[in-house]
Length: 260
Image 1 (cartoon, rainbow, N blue to C red):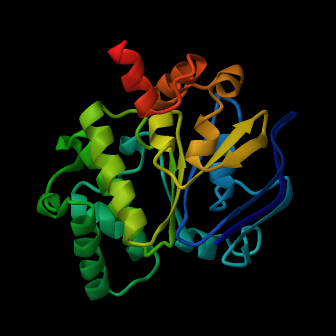
Image 2 (cartoon, helix red, strand yellow; image 1 turned 180 degrees about the vertical axis):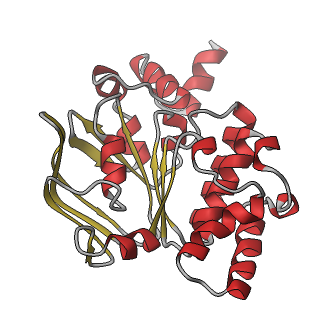
């Protein structure tokens, strides 16, 4: 789906990405984590052509982002941190229709796409509502519906839950997992380690480079290393690490200790 080949990116005199190589498969659920300034959001913006590499290439379905950015964005959509910055319509259904209208989709097809997208994210009953009256989680689901209406194959979530309360965050995470089950490729940039643990593969960034990648179990088993590079760890991983220090390696071990 996405190939990142030796990509570097600079902001003036500062290198934000340094020789990134990465492949994301069709239908995969990938989480990208890293401390502030690690380059994860810069990488996210390179995946759909919002930023173009200073060096190297990003290919989406074989299309170079430098050659045809509009075809790339039709395949890879983005949902950002603040839902208020993404909503342009005064009515929910108008906002969701905005993307396909700009793609020149026929009106009847737009109507069908809008209803289908809102239904997918559980917001169809709010199609006539004013976005400013919605909760943060509901607004973010409307933003996701706007991406879905453009028939993208991949959605990049750049800290999409960072400004939400626990309920809104839960709503959006449930939606993300449902979209993955439906076959969409998901790339989730997050600083919440419990969110990253839901992904099938976790990529760790530090200093503009990918320093480790693997399954969530593999990444979060190295608690000491994650803390060393400034990251928190899921509560379950922290508990597991502390139990291992006490030579408690299984549930049976724990039960035996408690019975003493």
